[in-house]
Length: 327
Ligand code: XMP
Image 1 (tube, rainbow, N blue to C red):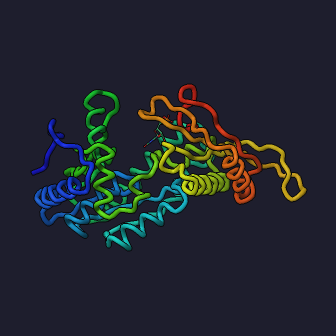
Image 2 (cartoon, rainbow, N blue to C red):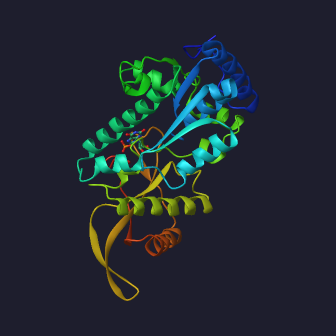
């Protein structure tokens, strides 16, 4: 039986035993709903879609076709991790689409933040729909909808887009196996399904990806500077015990240059901004107090290891007046 609403008296899934019971129940429900038909899933590598993929692989194996669209705005190592975990370890039927050139060509010269977001969202649906049309016999679309999405949609806070805005002729029946769970429960279930801890407990990452951290018109070299500096920041936070403590942290490389010195020569290069915030509801955020010595070490690494960066700045702005992201 597919359960549409979270029962009022449902115990919070906090233990491996409760997670196992939920998994068993959902595996049976998925098999009953889907039968021997095929299911399509947009697998971003985020927590919710990854857990849905793992659940469906357990329930129906290669009747699930997962499509991972790399829009070129993912963090360092992300597409590789999706391929390693799902294709190599879980033996998933995974279609990997490297659409980097397509996205970056469309974004070339576009400076308006809302326009950039529209292009990324619209192109994503187009690439996914194109892949879906190449496949035969798909009747179901799996989605990582969770219980807060449904509550927010019912309360008019945000529209929960069923089928993610796919063209109307693509009329799939939905499979939403984690839709009665809260985020913390999705994580417990994900770990029991064998997903790596860092994938299940990763910090939030926006759909438009690094595109909103490369303010102004995105260029490949500046995007690379965002990706490399972000990887250094994440590595240092993990090494220094901050990764599980700070809610969200990343780097931004705006489109302006300043004069500096490298190897005794003038270096006219970009600045990299470090942002690290804490919050409970993301409506208001405070700034993490990164230890001074660690900040100096991160600065040293970024300015010496990332081509094109000669300064590192620390964003002290809470939300409000800032938002978390720059665009
Ligand atoms: P802001 O910048 O609005 O961000 O203060 C609040 C939180 O939302 C994330 N964010 C997004 N997540 N798609 C997403 O899935 C988006 O377009 C998007 N924009 C911002 C942001 O990273 C932060 O956690």
